[in-house]
Image 1 (cartoon, rainbow, N blue to C red):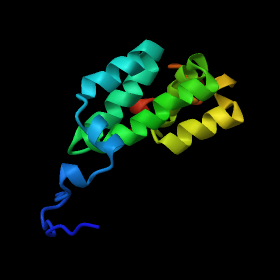
Image 2 (tube, rainbow, N blue to C red):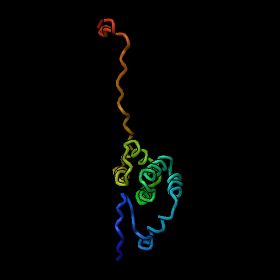
Image 3 (tube, rainbow, N blue to C red):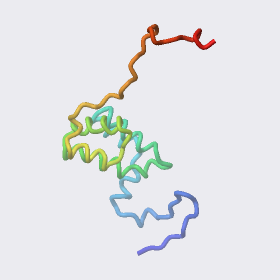
Image 4 (cartoon, rainbow, N blue to C red):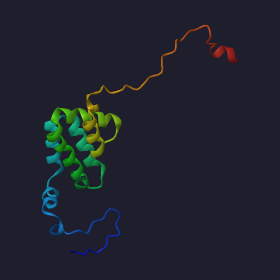
Length: 136
């Protein structure tokens, strides 16, 4: 058991490295580029997810566990499926481990992405369009 002085700085940590579990100490020393390179071997969408997660926090190390979890999903479900799931997660703007895992569990990465509906183009000339001259 250990005690630490409270940090009043928002997001401040006072944990000493020697008090961290060995696995946490190990990946805390990794540069973000190591995770990004691993993700790139899976595909560009997976790489984009990892880069986005690592750049979202004040410190990249805060996103390491999420990224490691997401990358491990490739071993369980296959890298091709993970890449498709990351593409869907990016489209949904939902880059959490739970979302990507859910996409893989339900197999929804195989479904086509819905395209946003666009408003139909109106004709420029039509009998019912009065034009600006009508309102003078």
